[in-house]
Length: 147
Image 1 (cartoon, rainbow, N blue to C red):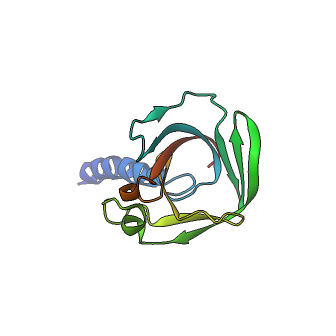
Image 2: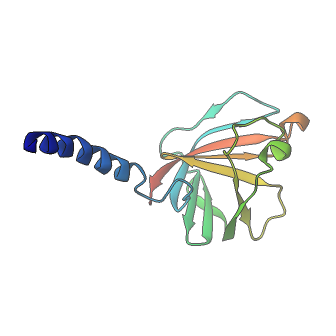
């Protein structure tokens, strides 16, 4: 009996530990940190453009402030907020899995349309614009530092 409990503990403790580590970090929706562009595509040009490490196209989010870098230089900065929004399918005119892309970033100084995002692992993907009208576009960023 004593050995059964010992074996049970040796089996369960690693599972509990693995489960806790799975959600460690900035959380599934956290965009805090620095991200570098890896891919971009658009409805007008559906071919995926790839960007290598060190390309200088960076998004940096700290608190509720952001900076956008192009070729290593800040081209825009300001404040942003995150809102929950379940209208991604009607906004980008694509059918996406239910429950995904339910968060939207709103830049305080922008009049642009809705920009939906999702963080999966170390990837940050944005969808914006309506693909049915050739206005849709998507970008994938990779976390380079932060949470």
